[in-house]
Every structure is written in structure tokens, then in C-alpha cells.
Image: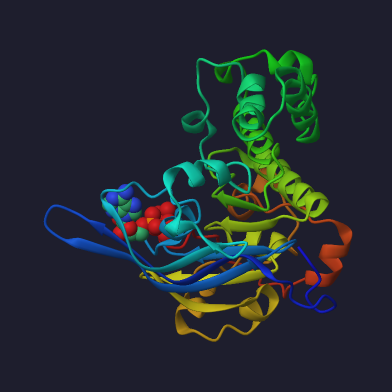
Length: 316
Ligand SMILES: Nc1ncnc2c1ncn2[C@@H]1O[C@H](COP(=O)(O)OP(=O)(O)OP(=O)(O)O)[C@@H](O)[C@H]1O
């Protein structure tokens, strides 16, 4: 979320170099990621879009070496986090960086939160795992994190279990635990897909705010081109495990170079953020969570209005 016109490109925090990821199945091998190169700098949001099965999640999970092995085989390339190849680290070293230097928010917090543990303790545990925090310090930091992600009455919520929270609050808890250790990189894989309309918007606004405040590098995986237009600095378009196009969001959306990007944009004629939302009209575009951007973003990033058409989730 930088102004790329004014700020020179910063050093990448996370860099994928010719990454190749295979899934070795019983009768065949899926070449899920076929030589992907991309990088994200501090304070930057890079969106990854593409049809279902194009290798977005397999790429993102590689940044934490989280693809299940087997069947996953890292068949080539590097994933450099602050210059160190994550794929060459031992499990013990990986545990140190996961959650501390790089963390991830998934689509469904119910699968990531422990149903039997109080949510506040789950946030505090990240610090207990990674730092030399006392129990009291970790608790205080967790309360601050819950407050920062906009959870009202954090003292009370701290003691609750995941099932006692709404989907939106659970996603906020996930974001709090992803960010409590102040990672350099946040990976958000369809972070709002499971949420309802207004909550989607709130969560995206929250991510934008936190990203700006902490200057993290954000890798955002989404099917929603409206979200990309509003929140990302650059975009990578993937297809069949390869990057087909990459560039500044405005440039890619207004002057797409690859035929596939043009198809993707044509299949989603309503991605422009310049529409007004009318919930009564059942606006599917907004139903996928286009956040209302801060004023300066609206000024800087207004993209051409494309009247008509319905939003189609590419590849879905
Ligand atoms: N754990 C796995 N085991 C076997 N195959 C997998 C596994 N994970 C991914 N794949 C395969 O790798 C390819 C890329 O999948 P990936 O999940 O990265 O796509 P995606 O672009 O993130 O899709 P979606 O948008 O639907 O999440 C697909 O063919 C998928 O079936």
C-alpha cells in the first residue's frame, strides 16, 4: 500500500525465485507451480490472482514451507525470506520463523483456531512460543492485539472459546494471532471469503490499516478483482502454475498485456471500485468484499468505471 509513483522500490522481504512445486499423487504428478518468480517489499501489498487450481495457494504456502510433504515435493527454486532460503531450513528453524517473521491468515478461522482453548490464550501462545515473554507479558500483548484488531471488550473476549464468537470476530482473532509477534510478512489467503458482506469489508479495511501501521509486506491471494483494485500495489496473474503477467495494479487492470489477464478482467466486468454499493440490489460485486478505501487511495487509484455486467469469480 505504497505510492509507487513516489517511493522507489524497496528491498524485497520475500522473494520467490524460479519456484517449482509438485504434488506426487498415486498415478501422476501435478506440477502445481512451474518456475514462479515474484517478490514483495516491506510496506507493499502484492495480490495474486488467477483461476482455481492455478497454483496461488501452493505458491503462498511455500513461503512458510507449509505444503503437506508428501505429497508435495519442492522440485526447484528458492523462497528467500530476508535473504534466507526457507526451503533449505530445518524444521526447528522453520518453527522459529513461522508466526514470528512470517504468518498467515486463512479463509476459515474455525479450522485454524483450537476449539478447546480460550481465544486470548491462543494469541498469547504465539509469543510464548517465539519469545522470552512471561505469561503476564504475553497476556498483556495479546489483549493489546485483540484491541488493535477492533475486538470490543478484549478482557471478556480473551476468555471466550472460538464457538462463542461470530465469524467476523474469529477472523479478527486470527489476524491478532498472525500479527502479535510483528511479522515482516503477512500472507492472507482469501481472508474474507467465508464472511458475509459487511464483515468482509470491515476485515479488509482492518488489514489495510494494520499493514500501513506496521509496514508489513503483504501477499494477498484472492479471486476478487475489486479487492485487488482497492488494496494492492502490484498484482501477479497466475495460470497453470505460471506467472502470466505482473505489474502495478492500475497498469495491469487498465492496460493488461497478457490475453489471459484480459479474459480474467472481461469475466469480471464490475471490478472497478468506483461503483456505489446498493445492498438492496443484491450487488454481488460488493458481496465479495470490496472495501471502502481511505480517501487518498480513492483519489490515487480510481479506475475506469465499467458499467453493467455481474461479478463472476474467475475459475469458480
Ligand atoms: N495437498 C495437495 N495434494 C495434491 N494436490 C494438490 C494439493 N494442493 C494443491 N494441489 C494441486 O495443485 C494445483 C494448484 O493448487 P492451488 O491450491 O495452489 O491452486 P489455487 O490457485 O490456490 O486454487 P484455489 O483458488 O481454488 O484455491 C491444483 O491442481 C491442486 O489440485
